[in-house]
Amino acid sequence: MAKESLVVASKVKAYIKSKEMMTSSDALEALSDKVYCMLDAAIARTKANRRSTVKAQDL
Image 1 (cartoon, rainbow, N blue to C red):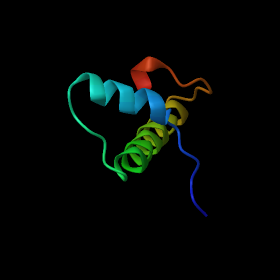
Image 2: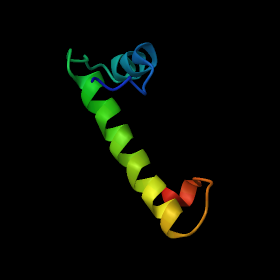
Image 3: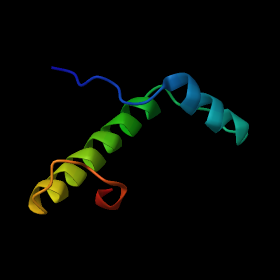
Image 4: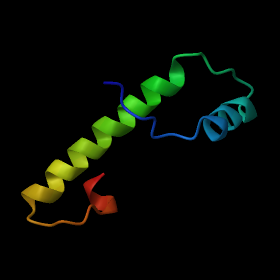
């Protein structure tokens, strides 16, 4: 099952374009995968600290 994208494609593309670059067709999926990994690590850290709220410090 494919994961739902966690990034707003238009915002990401606009940011990259503002830096005078182009966005490849697979870049958004890769970015979303990175976000999933970051969130999974933050959730693990939160649980290890016996909390239920993910905080900026967990990222």
